[in-house]
Image (cartoon, helix red, strand yellow):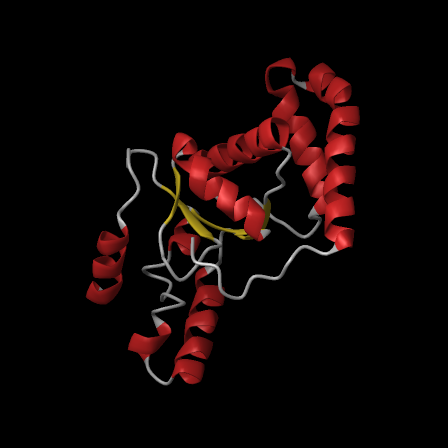
Length: 183
């Protein structure tokens, strides 16, 4: 996994992770009453909603939301790993503004496309892309995400995952590079 620009976890982050796990355990009986078949996922969602209060799952496709929810519940319950959502669905106007800003910063549309795609090509606009945090959560998702149809697509973005339920296998690094160059 590409590791530049990684902010190491602070003691506060570790404490919040432990508190989120304890909270999920405490919320499990309540979640079981609400939805017995999905109690672990629901308790995880509530606990992580407190740990990552700004995240917003609206606008994601049903499949993307279900896959992400199942993956993060597995990460929490099986491995004690928290996965938060930094960015999911983006309105086309927001994506266009991000692209335009990157064009100004990078100097050309071709250079900008290395980090931001225009709205008509962005999987964020389609509701099937997720930017996750922290780095450890992204590492877990890269290792286990294929079970849920979630794949890290770009070598230069450790945080970016896309939902591809029929992919079977993630694209290789070379296929990713070829796709980026073809844009």
